[in-house]
Length: 153
Image (cartoon, rainbow, N blue to C red):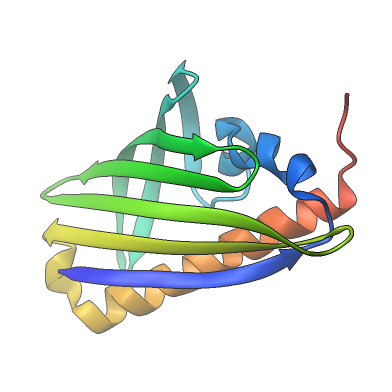
């Protein structure tokens, strides 16, 4: 099952303040639900151990993430491969930061996603709706935390 998720949010910070957090695995993980651990392999690769809930099912999920292309502080491309029992997830995401006025930045995202196996069998509409909701909530929380958390030098 393939689907695309895109959207944007406005963050009360400059791109230079957002970029270090956008590329920090632990900062990103603290805004995602059900993250159990983050293992940083190097500056471009990390693994997230998590779980997802689809309907009445909750399954473990391992995500291998790569920051595949970076143009600080404007554009980040992310590749992600996830594994859950009997299922797999592949994601390619492009995230851009655009100044819309001083101290205000639009964070936009576009992800191409493919889910195979048992989770794909849950139904396209349920998975797509859940994915959109989770992604939107994640980026809203991410943006809100940056707006209230001053950057340390």
